[in-house]
Length: 172
Image (cartoon, rainbow, N blue to C red):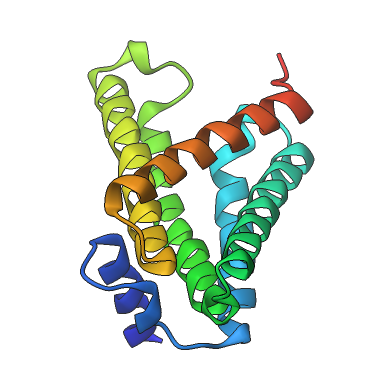
């Protein structure tokens, strides 16, 4: 387990690639469930309720898996799916775990303390780093340039945020 965690950390630090992960359907399921749990915790404050946060996180993970599956099938590289989606889900878990203490640092109103503002800055940096990690994984998965992976990463980020806001409008 320690070796596996180190692999996910190395992928997040751009020192390893998804193909370094084992091809294991158990790993897909395990990282999916952990990402569903940690991602829901991270976004529950946005919705002020667990159910829409859980559904939004589930939609995010399902759409990501669907798009990766379709793109790999189109490229005739369907065998890469298990490692690619494990990498995306597993690295998402690590990003979510880093986001949790930052959210505590930000609090309800980041303007009330200097730590809140610093937390916002770190959170924005984490979101950007998360997109870099996704771009890194996509670069290796689809054998494309990093810049193209970054465009795909940003595009997906914008798409999923738009869909979440459309389907699960923010509660007041």
